[in-house]
Image 1 (tube, helix red, strand yellow):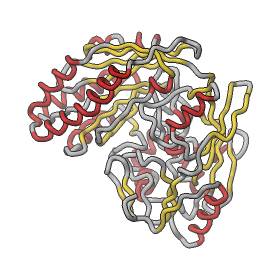
Image 2 (cartoon, one colour):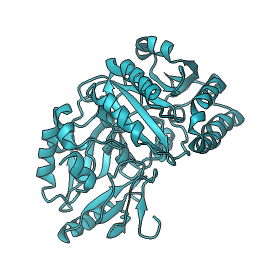
Image 3 (cartoon, helix red, strand yellow):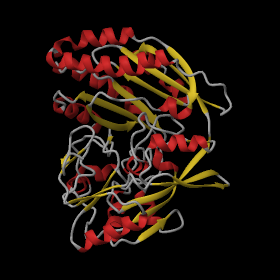
Image 4 (cartoon, helix red, strand yellow):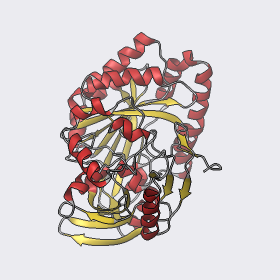
Length: 436
């Protein structure tokens, strides 16, 4: 908070709420939501503010769940361990708390600063053809509704609320705690290295079938990529993490400090970007290390940027990337940020971008000091041509009318919203756009 103004991490959205609250218990959260509803105020929850959209913006009551955090309990089920986690728990803290109990997240994205509730509500995912997004790990939710009532939901209890709220966009209520499927702690071997884009695409089916967590970063204006192949290993595997010096050089100096400098330079001289991308890609060196799983999944991101990400049918990703390259060649638009490509299996979560189909995620970025609009609009058009779905927490230009056809359960979600928040206590401009 800066005075009374809230801003998200990327600086794309800000708001001056009527009030900012930080409840310490679910009971306090319940009381303040009920009171806000009585006064006719909108209510929105906020975590780390890492959504690039206006998902948390409100003119009413902005609620931070930072004080409602931690692992409440862990229980054993026939399917495996399930952790009950308070909603404000940051992923980084959750990973460490789970590890201390001999447990780990089944899958993770590539950053770990978000709150668990915020990450779930916007459809955060990782990569791996056999490992779904975070929402597929939910086994139950506790939600504070507009009247202040605290409701539990699962596949058997309030199942309509449960199905909608697994990716709820903050439209149904405020998640206060959740049951999350986890697994015994495991190690991960990371193998990273430079490659050619054409060769990587030719071998894509093999990598998806044989690598647990595969992704790559394509340097625009070049035929070069950085590939990442992460393999899951037993928890008692001897760890061989990156040395402190190598980790600092690769993850701090190269990926953050030097990359910030490159983006500042190319903001002034965008014509130099193709040559700089060639040099950057050629400067990459292969590396291999084994560490705790969560340390391999996530990387520090300190260079500020704007991001848009589209989930496209997995079979279409090669054409999508080629079309982006062709557009860049024709347009004269110069992009310094690599294009990130990840993968996920089909799932049954109503508003999941992978609902009903194996998906590839194509994420494009632009440095925060440069105009992103032309680039993002072009990529969005390419993705929409193959029925791409935008990440709910990242920038896009879609609205309810053109989102509805791509989600078979869109109207079911809206019906649940009408049932549980008919007065639209949890509404804001973003929801009015994407849900109507």
